[in-house]
Image 1: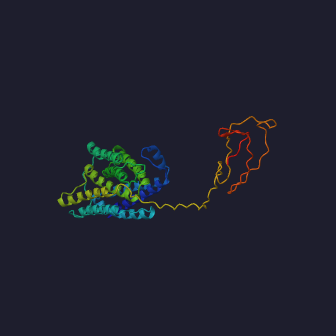
Image 2 (image 1 turned 90 degrees about the vertical axis):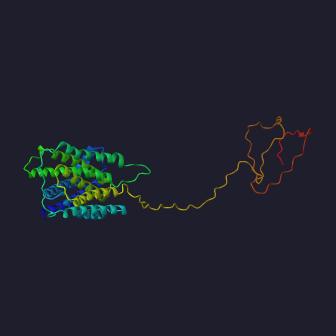
Length: 390
């Protein structure tokens, strides 16, 4: 029972490492995969992120030692217990809530794990019996390594180039982290596969890991996967991203170990269908998760209404043109000006101001007109001064 317990404990350790990564990423400046050196410098300076890295490597070691004697398919149901821990931590620590579609995807994940467990228990013999793998060569076939590594590097590039590009603007929608989960999942699946290869070589007596390509592939895939995971955890929810990552990594481990290390595959038709069905259900669960977050209207504080200003009627502008109500009319010359007589002060000499007529609504009575002098020329009277109009 040591190997099953070690496999279950490794899954819980993985969840703890992911929580540390999430806590560290939320306090960092924005991380970007396009600036790897800057991103590496920021994450390395975070003590919490370094602690999460140590915990993650410990989980890798525990899982690889458990898989030395335990079939990979029998270790898959151990994720069911860690899934409960992940949901609780996501809800309590980070306040994450799942939608109905995401709960349905989680149910498909549980069904995939249950199908994998059923394929192990239905096999003849003890369900937790030690697995017998063929002798492992120090240098695996190049075609097998390329078949495992090359698609694992191309899948993240394809996902980010065509499927889950982050958009900005009026119609931008936040992503749930499916691309980050699949990309980091295949890379960490490669790292876990070659870590298992190093453990198998050490059990065979090869204690020099630098003489094989397993260590270098483990480091390259692990560094890329953890970097992509850190960027995704800063932007997306922990629950969805880690679920997709784990499902992808375990399915990748099962297929890659079968190809590289001769992982025993059952020959019974029913068991083969059950194990293949578990892989198909895992892929269906990944496809069921929504790619974008739902638009939730944020509660906006009500704007304070401005204080009511009493409406004041603007003062009427003073009209420059006299009206009939004021009784003031401009003096209109009736004839051409005549030469001024002697004794009259020249024009331009300041005259004493005359009293302005009072402004009232009632017109003032007109003064008596002076006696008319002089004769008429036609209809126009020849006067020496201008008479105000009546």
